[in-house]
Structures are given as C-alpha cells and as structure tokens.
Amino acid sequence: MTSKFPFIGSSYVERSVAFDCQRAVNLYPVKSGSGTAKNIVGLQGTPGLEEFITFPVSPIRGLWEVDASDRYFAVSGDKLYEIFSDATYIERGTLLTSIGTVSISDNGLQLCIVDGDNGYILTLATNVFGQIVSGSWRGSNTVAFLHGYFMWAEPDTQVFYWSAINDGYTIDPLDFASAEGSPDNIVAIKTVHEQFWMFGTASIEVFYDSGASPDPFARIQGVFIEYGCAAPQSVAKGANTVFWLGNDSQGSGIVFMANGYQPQRISTHAVEYAIQGYDNISDAVGYTYQEDGHYFYVLNFNSANTTWVYDVELAEWHERAYFSNGQYSRHRANNHIHAFSTSGIHLVGDYELGILYRQSLDIYDDNGQPKRWMRTCPHLADTLEFIYYNKLQIDMITGTGLITGAEEDMTPQIMLQWSDDGGYTWSNEYWVTTGALGNFKTRAIWRRLGRSRDRVFRVMGDTRTKVFLINGLIDTEKGDN
Image (cartoon, rainbow, N blue to C red; front, side):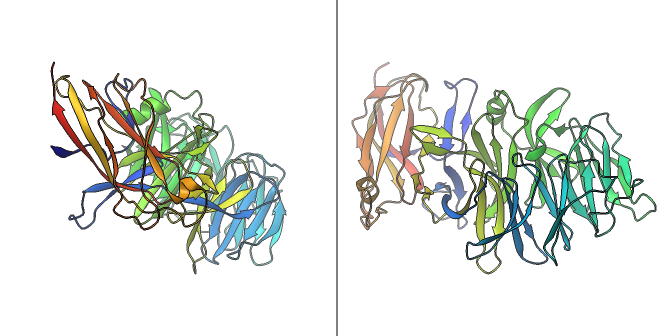
C-alpha cells in the first residue's frame, strides 16, 4: 500500500546521526497559503545567481542603498563604486584598505564607510569622496545613523561617539559616551526602531536620542540584554527586527532575534551543535532579504566554509551551498541589496571575487555552475522490525528540461541513495529522469529497494532546471523480525 512518508523538512542533524540526520541543502520549506494544496508544505529550490557586474578589483566588501535618492553603492577591493540598473558603474573613491568587511550608512546627504582604522565620506550632491581626518576620529568597525547623527564605536573599548548633525566630517571631541552596563567592548552598532543598539561581546545596551544638550544620547533604563555578540558582522536588520550570533559568559553559538527588547533564541539544538563545532565563528557575516513574502536571515561562516539560512515565516533552517569539483562550500553571496525601484532586483556580492550577482528564484544555477540540491529524510523505523521497500516516488515538478544545452539539462535526472546503518554510510547511486521539457506526466520512481530495520533516504539533483519537491510516497510492508 502506497502512503506518504515524512520527506519534506528542514536541516536538523543531531549530535548522533542515528537519532536524526535530516538535511535540506539548496532547498527551503514553503507553506501553502490556501490550505488546499497537494501538501501543506513543499520544498522550493533556493535562488540562483547570474553575473550582473564584475568589478576590476575584489572582493565585494559591502553594499548599500541610499533610500532617499534611489542610489546604490558597492565597496569592492579598495574602491567605492556607484552601480546602475543597466549594469554599468562609476568609481567614486579609493579606500586605504582592500580586504575585510566594511560597514556603511548614510544620512541622506552623505555616505559614510568605515573599515576599522579609517572613515570615509561621499558627499552625494557633488560625488566628492574624502577621508575623515578630524582630530577626534577614533576609528571604528561599525557605523549607524539616527536623527542626523552618524554613530561610531572606538575599537576595543566601551566608547561610542558621534558626528555633527548631517556632517560626518565634523566631530566634537566632547561628543562621546560609554556603554557601561557591562565591562565588555562594543563590537557593533545597529539602528533599530529609531534607537541605537550597542552590541558588546557579552551584553547589549540600547540608547535613544533624548534631545538633551550637550549629550543627546541616553540609555533606556531597564533595558539591558545579557547576551552579547560573537561575530560583529553577523548583526543584521530585517523583518522589522534585528538578528545576531550570540555570546555570553556561559558559552556562544546561539542565534538570536530581538522580540521587543527580549532576545529570542531562533537556532535549534542541531544548528547550535553545528555552529559550536566550528573552530572560528567570530568572522561570521549576516544579511537579510525578502522574497515571495519569506524573510531570510543568511549567516555565512567564513572559516567554516558553511552557510546557514533562517526563514522567519516558518521558523525553519536550511543550508545553502556552492557546488564545485564534487564538494559543497559556503554560498557565494556575502552581502545584499534590493536595487532599482523600477525593476526591483536582488543583488548580492561575491565573498571572494569582484562579481556582483543578480539573485532570483527564476535563475536555476549559480552563474552557470549547476546548483546541487539535496534532501536527507528522517529515519524510517518501526520497532526496528524489517520493512520491505517495494516502491518510492518523489512527487515533484517534472518536465522542466531545457530546450538546448547539455544532455543532463535537456533530460534532467535525480538520484536516490539510502543508508541502512543509521546515516553513517550510503548505498550506490540510483538515477531516474524527471522528464524532458513538457513531459509533465513523468514520474520520479524507484522500485524493489530491499529491506531494512532502520533506513534513511536521500535524494539529490544538480541540473540547471527548476526544482520544487511536493511530497514523498512509499509502498512498504512489514517482514520478519
């Protein structure tokens, strides 16, 4: 008898794979809005990438949109570029550094960039670029804006300081204060709901513009978050809140989302097991974006060469990866802007190269490279008695082959493997076609799959075609003990 089995799901690999070894790589769950779809939740292929601009220097260190004037900027290598909708660009300035993530903000009149030791200003009306040379400049790895003020944090201290109103070049030597609720240093500043959130290594304090003189910024009394930030560049705003990779005196590697002034843990035990196993998490970089109503927090672990993504709507995690030479590595995108109000495209910057990509669900490869997806299912076990597997079928979109191209893209295939030892070793590969273009009645089906007391199936594909998985169907019968 054929029935559904738990095929659709997210990534959840436990400390013991014999307990749970689920993975969703380059796939994310989507929920039916009507409630009457073929299945409540399906698996959508993640967006692909195509080259939009290649800058002469690399890597892409930061992207920024100036909302007030609909202008868009990229820092790539040691250059600041303005980018345009026809995929052209103009160099606007030169930085003193060429590597490392930069922090960018604007006040509507000026664009401010910081890279640690140095600060830079682009005057938007004249396109004049210059370095902040005020004697009161203290350096900063982070910049934020509120009510006309640029705000910076002096590296390796509790001190934050601010500019004159609407003038990032001018800094009064007395315009500084300290986040003193905890002795940890400020590593990131983010403007959230017209307030400055000061992220320390072990705590977070929130300041607002009180309008007082000479010191306009005051701490909100009663707001003190005793979870800090393990990776300064992991702090990202999106979905009307802020996300970060956390740290406190008891440990690190938990991912948080702010719920008002409360830190809400959004990472699962499985995700935390993965993160806390990485040798270095301090260089993690995060960004957010929205597509089809899904708000995503993308967290790249550079040293670990891994990318995790959180879907705010479904509260689910999946993995994204670039597949090359038979290996998965971290996703190419390291930063993001939603650009050009007339066309509204997602642009992401390569973490290693000077390539700015257009990212879209209507692109099915990674800049020409096949995007290998994989779904590893939950364990199938019934009191550890033998189960005979007569047939397995994946209900999915079929008939999506390309009109021209490589044979594997014109007649795409997907592959099935299974593990009978708890997810430690895997069978040979068994391939079936998902149909040439227009063959919508093609069935992805495998028969006579043997028996097992505990089986894990995984399915994968790596063609340049659309992917949407709806369900898994299986025909089984119990056997001898």
